Image (cartoon, rainbow, N blue to C red):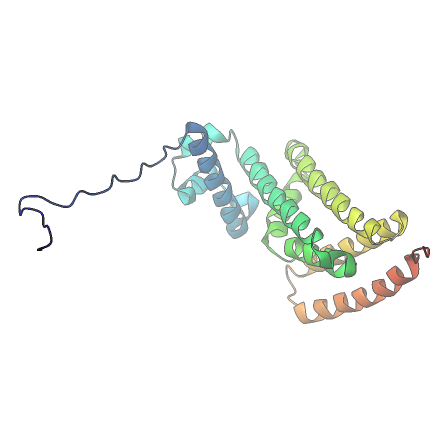
Length: 225
């Protein structure tokens, strides 16, 4: 029996095209703000805070300056929001590292990797551009300081819990965290004009060895059952 075929003037019926979900106004607003904040970071890194203008940020983001001013009333508000976005992402990344099984086994290495991802990379440069200007601008400092304090206190809390779970007394954990932070941050500032990563890595490796001995001496062995 011959197979059935459609008449020449008919075509195979097509399935309906999938419906596109319409973005809400809230979705569009969030997407525009994120685009503007990312553009602000890009301009900040390339030109610095002093030369950054809202018009240039709007151009990089591909929106009108009027649209930018609808979301951010001033250059300072835009830069602070962009910095906050960066550091919120850094908090999430730090939490992810701290939750790994390796974090408690290699305490300083884990904390160092978190520090290096910020201070040896562009987030620190972007924040530093703003902080330097804020030093002599009380209004800007009032806006940026809570962002930096939130990041620092949240990060400290995340890693202090890891150190305490590993058995390190809280007082010693705070000392080691702060020494490691300031060592890394000092290198990061020096790195802005003197790229000496080979020596930095060597120094950090030596610091890990020193702190490993300190941690081993400070952690009390568990009582036998």
